[in-house]
Structure formats: C-alpha cells, structure tokens
Length: 271
Ligand SMILES: Nc1ncnc2c1ncn2[C@@H]1O[C@H](COP(=O)(O)OP(=O)(O)O)[C@@H](O)[C@H]1O
Ligand SMILES: [Mg+2]
Image 1 (cartoon, rainbow, N blue to C red):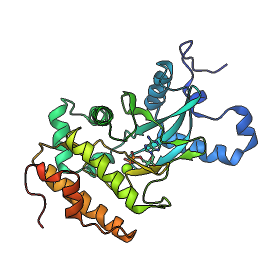
Image 2: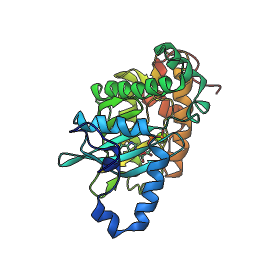
Image 3: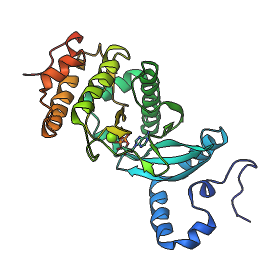
Image 4: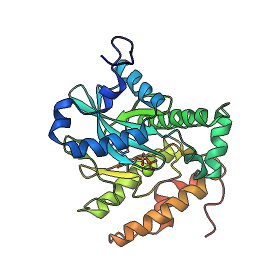
C-alpha cells in the first residue's frame, strides 16, 4: 500500500502521469527520461490539478509530452476514443519576465491577483477565453474544453501518430494555398473575433491535413487596443518574409491589408 492515501475514486497523480508497470518494464530508458521530465514539470499541486481535471472528465490520462519549453509544456491526453491537448504552465519565476509589456498590462487589468501563481492562473484562463472567442468566430484553432489553475485542456491537433507540425517545420506542398488559408483565418480573427494575436508566426501555426491552425493565443488583445495595429503589422511583416522564402510574392503591407488590418486604430508601424 502506498504510504500516501488519496480520496477514493480520484486517481493517484503518479498513476496518471507515469506509464503503466508493463510499459515501464519494456523500456527503462524511456522511463528514466519520462520521470525526469515529469519531476521537472509537475510540482505536487500541478499533479493534483491534473488529477482533478481527470475526475471532472476532461480527459482520461496523459500520454506523452508533445512539446516542452521554459514556460510550460503541451501533452497529448487520451479522451474516450480520441485525444485532447493539455497545456501546463510552469509555476516558476521564468515566464513573466519575457512577456511583452502590453500583455502584462492587460493581465493586470483583468485580474486582481498580485502573487505569481495567481497571475499564471489568470494567464491560463485568458488563453481559454481567447480560444473560445476564436472558436465562436470559426477561426481554425483548438477548441478549449476547460481550465483549472495552471492547466488548460483543448483539442489535440494531430492524430494517433502524433501532433501536427509547426508551419515552420512542415513540408509545404502548396505555399500559395497556405497563404490564402492564413488570410482567411487571420482575417476571421481580426474581423469576427475582433482580436489581434500578438505572437503570430510559423512557430505558432500548426499545419494539419494541409490547413493552418492558429495556436498559442494567451497574449492576444482586442482590435481596439491602441497597439493592435502595430502588433498585427509587425507579426505579418515577419510572416511575409517566411512566405516569400517559400516563393509566395507577398509583402507585409499586402498581408496586413488582406486580413482587414486597415480597420484597426493607431499607427500600423514605423514604415
Ligand atoms: N492543441 C494542440 N495540439 C497539438 N499540439 C499542440 C497544441 N497546442 C500546442 N501544441 C504543440 O506544443 C507547442 C507549444 O505550444 P504553444 O501553445 O505554442 O506554447 P508555448 O507558449 O510554449 O510556445 C506547439 O509548438 C505545438 O507543437
Ligand atoms: Mg508557441
């Protein structure tokens, strides 16, 4: 028996995030790396949060990390006979140092939290809300299913083989079609969801079944934000350079115009 007892019906956190005994026996090396990763990632409170989300029926189990970084990680989870993505923000002092000032100000406006954990939770909630607004506006992006503390649950973009690649790493057969699709999706985000992404790039775009999916939206702001126009044109300038390298003849200005950027307030950039 385990020395630590958990509520009946609530899965023990280690059972949730560690592979089954049989799998562990089959590959001890994987187990070692997995364990290290989980130790780094999941402080006790995060394990409990994951466990509570499972009890709520948000997903059945965590499968493996899709991506991990300084600020957190994204995991594939099994849900019924399909998958969900679980994004975990790390509760450590690294994240808000790199955050743009405008996003920090928005967050402070939206929450009364002043301590670090509280801000992370507010940031997680913010990403959930923004994904919801994008789904309502039919922007292709992961549908959010729930959030608790520093953990967000959303659609998994990918299939049984794994997560969809970032546009940056994807094999692109038809760059023109990708550009058109981007114009459509970013256009909906600006016109219908009335949001500017703020960190749009081929890193924060996945390519799944030939279509783009916009992700990583926590820093998005309203199109009414005084910096909205500048943020959009900055992102699209960079994006246009990436597209030109693929052979799509488009300038940042044309891209900006195509998504309806002209409607936004404020100077578009220091062009
Ligand atoms: N819903 C999702 N489905 C599949 N993979 C995802 C999903 N969300 C994120 N990812 C993967 O995780 C990576 C990091 O996610 P992202 O939201 O960009 O977080 P970060 O803040 O770490 O950049 C992405 O580059 C992508 O590979
Ligand atoms: Mg990202």
